Image (tube, rainbow, N blue to C red; front, side, top):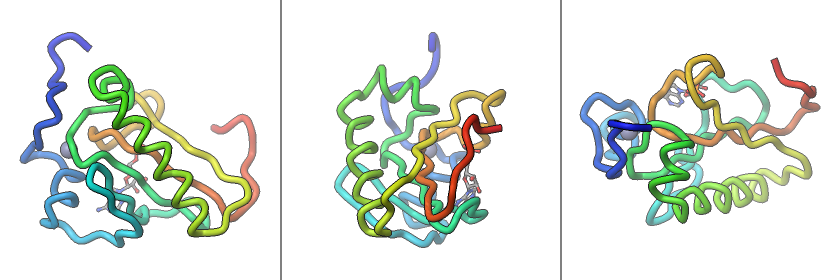
Length: 122
Ligand code: AMP
Ligand code: ZN
């Protein structure tokens, strides 16, 4: 997006940057050099984990354009989370933009599983 920060630098006003920095507690389930995975504070399924890049990008679209290998890291970690929770089926969701329900402006993948999931989503 034109004019958007896309250098990955942390932001003082970002909740998920604060989780990466250890300034806000989270139930971390996995960590790599580039990503952190933690349980959603308001789970919508028995497994509801967020996988985020440690670097700050406002949404999945900016991430995919500015740092595609990091986007691939998120997908790999999503699979690892599913394996750890022994999920045969699961859903990966990137809410992108407020109209799609994005509320935290640091790219994140929701990993949802452990119950039947309807399609289409709401
Ligand atoms: P989204 O609406 O796609 O931007 O997703 C943001 C998600 O972050 C929501 O599912 C929230 O429940 C979750 N969330 C907000 N604050 C925290 C927190 N401190 N720790 C864990 N998850 C959080
Ligand atoms: Zn951030």
